[in-house]
Amino acid sequence: MAEEKESLNFIEHIIEEDLATTHSKDSLRFRFPPEPNGYLHIGHASAICLNFGLGLKYNAPVNLRFDDTNPTKEEQEFVDAIKRDVAWLGFEWENECYASDYFQQLYDWAIQLIKDNKAYVDSQSSVLIAEQKGTPNTPGINSPFRNRSVEENLELLEKMKNGEAAEGEHVLRAKIDMASPNMLMRDPVMYRTLHKSHHRTGTEWKIFPMYDWTHGESDYIEQVSHSFCTLEFLPHRELYNWFLDQVYEKGKIRPKQREFARRNLSHTVVSKRKLAKLVEEGVVTGWDDPRMPTISGLRRRGYTPDSIRNFADGIGVGKRENLIDVSHLEFNIREDLNKKADRVLTVLDPVKLVITNYPEDKTEWLEAENNPEDESAGSREVPFSKVLYIEKDDFKEEANRKYFRLTLGKEVRLKNAYIIKGESVVKDADGNITEIHCTYDPDSKSGSGTEASKRKVKGTLHWVSVEHALPVEVRLYDRLFTDPSPDTHKDKDFMEFINPDSLQVITGYAEPSLKSLEVEDTVQFQRLGYFTVDRDTTSEKIVFNRTVPLRDSWAKLA
Image 1 (cartoon, rainbow, N blue to C red):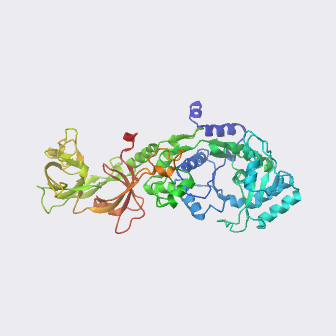
Image 2: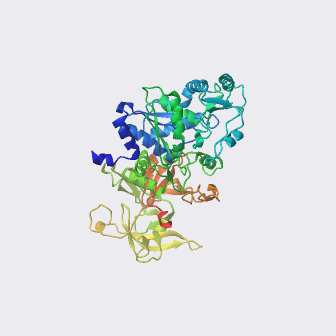
Image 3: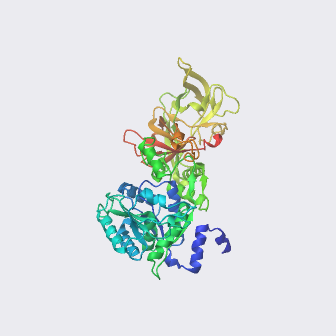
């Protein structure tokens, strides 16, 4: 039992201590509370895995709650995308909740706070309010409206609610302590006036609650036992508890807020404002562009739910922020797809290979294993003929002894096929090689059992029969930023670090079996990397996104 305790993270230790003192297992309830003002990104994936993972570990319900209190930024599109992403990651929520479901209850509580002399309507500008808050080292100044009568405050709040007050004319503030060392406790704003249509409530409400007022009270309404959030909300915990004190009834579950550190991912940004700028300025094609760190973008690129969950579990939760190299995420997708993805033959930068002693009109269908990591994956047949495509990089006219691919006078094996020997080349007027001529050993066919087939050669090349080749569009995606921390430079804008080579679009040539693939199917182009069928695919053209190369090409640059 002691060993099991040692393996717990600090969040789980908190829950275990509460179970031993104040909580029963039946009282546990968690939540994932995104604001629907953008698409979820890889940072959200960690929070999703944390909260839903706790639900699975403790057999406790987890709510999906949308903190939808800002109609100027929130849209139904984002609600739909968030639900789609959470479900795709493999999690099921107990209840689908919205902060907007609680607008009336929050308003009723606000009225009670006014009656209890714990809230007031302030008619100053936001600039004046900010100035009067003071600094961390100097106390704030009381608003001249702080001691308005209960009756006047109730009347003004009603006008705000009914839309009889202009935007910015009044706000409702909690009456706490303008000298508190915690700036957030210096009479924080609870409501502001917004004459905007809300994605769920329409124009019914003209005032909208602020996050700090809404969040903890929503947890309380839902009887969430543990409210886990990122470290920047640590200073908010005191206010979270103060608001709960005003509404808490004995005998009910009182939510406990605790904080964990963000895990920032290198070579990307996760600020929704900055991600939106990438979309708005056309750097990417949309929120689900495969270069984006959004869950939708990762999914389109070919990442799997298992790989993202394994990544989140692997980095864990901690109390200090740190930068996780994106290579860790790439490692997890390679590990997952190595087990799952069929191997196929595709040439991306072709040059013709002519087997001079192979029969002119002959086509063989050679057996190829689909996935050596999965015995149940079976095999398929691929066509082999006299003229093939191979990669240009797989041939040199002259090479040293450490070069194990095709060169003149040396032998290599064609994958699943024969041993060949380079004989000569054909060049155009500019000296570029247009054809490589070789001969083959007809007794060296892979798997034939002949002595020649057992002969060892140092190189094996992938290939595609020219006659049967399927042209495919291939999008070679790379990291979107050249700098590991593009948004941490004080003297430079993060946009200055955009990688100009983050996307290259080419035509590749694939074995004909790829015609049967469907959108989001992933395969390994042998020796090249993992590739996923994009939704831009049509009946006339298959489009592949490179998920990740077989090896980390950035490691040698570090």
